[in-house]
Image (cartoon, rainbow, N blue to C red; front, side, top):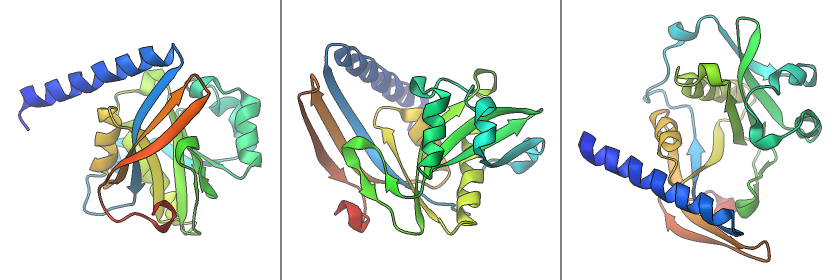
Length: 214
């Protein structure tokens, strides 16, 4: 794709996202999204680990949340809400640099817990969600590095297939996932009208779906 066409595509996506965000203020929520399968792919473009030698990537415990929860706003979640995630069995994977946490994401080992499209996970699967990066560290390649390291950590737990969702018009998020080897499974649209009516449609299937989505 030519640079000019790529810019048009990105601009088009951002314009539609702004329009959908504006509609949501009036109680009309339209969310097109892709369900994505993420796997550690040795042939994909992984971040150079030499660049991040001084960064520590690991699962953290509840005692670390008081510090790690200050990253971003996580959609306004309070510390007690994040602690509840851990009580529910979710894992928090974080990046530490110069003695402070600068990024984190969450892993659910029980279900794909995105409300419009929930399904139970198998023993070798996980659901990745709510990634946050400190403002000062954005644009440094932290997101793909954290994702790649999280794949490895989950693989050590026997979780070699990971799922997530990405809003269809969030081109940068989809791009970096696909660079790491992610595969689009299906395109959906979720419509909610004033909190009184909602529906979730599958618009397109890209490849064979896991049994939970068939």
